[in-house]
Image (cartoon, rainbow, N blue to C red; front, side, top):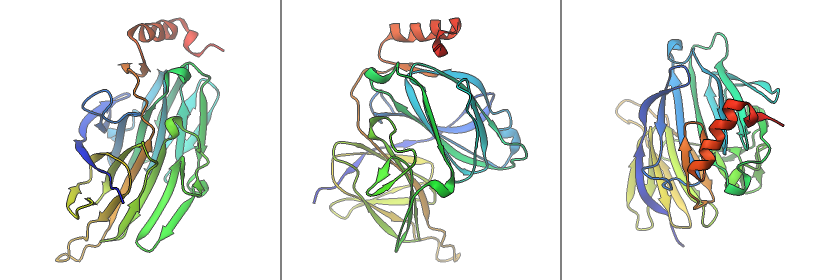
Length: 290
C-alpha cells in the first residue's frame, strides 16, 4: 500500500482583511504549492472589536470561495440578490466566475467567531462563466461516524456521503474531521489530487509508511504529496491534567490545475492582461453585467 508524505508545513500568519478584521492566513510559498487551493483564512476571536467591521462590499473574479463557520455567524449579500446568514456548523460556496460583488458582515450580537474561508482556483476555461451560489445549514451536511470520531462533508464528497455543495471547482472536497484523544483515521484522497491537513483544535500526528510520525500543531498546515493513504492520529491529551479534548481539523483535496496564476487582490486570472481587464470591468460596472 502506498502512503502520502508531507512535502512541507505551512505556518499561519496574523493578517487583516476587509475593514480591519483580524485573521490568520495561510498561503503557499509559490504559485502552485497548494494548487488548486490559493488561500485559507481563519477568523477566530471572542473580542467583537476584532471582527465587527466585517467585509464590506467587494468584488471577485476567477475563483470560488468556501466559507465554513464553526462558531458565530455572518450575513452574506451579493449583487445577484442572495441574502443569507451562515451560522455555526454551516457552509457557504460561491463561484465568482466572471464577477461577483458581495459583502460578509457579522450577525448582530455575535460575541465570538470561529470560521474559515478557502479560495479555490477556477480553470482558465471557467474563469468567465456565470457566477453561482449555494449554502447548507449544519443539519443538511452529511456526517460519517466511526469508533474514533466523526467526519462531516462540508463540500464535495467522501465515499457515498455527498454535500449539498457537491460540485466545487477542481473536484475539491472539504471535510471536517473530529478525533477522540488518541484516535486514528485513514484518509485516501483521490489519486492525483492535492491533499492538505489543517488542524484547528489540538494537534494531529501524520504517520508515514515507515511508522515515523510528524506532529502538526493547531494553526499549521501540512501540504502532502504522492498518492495513497494518509494515517492521522489525534493527540492523546495531557494525562497529568486529565485533559482529553481530542483533535479537530480540516481535510482538503482537489485536482491541481498546473496553470499560470496571476493575482491582484480579489482577482485571480492566468495573465496580467486578464487582470487589467478585470480591473477595467470592475471600474466600468461590466464585471457584474449580465
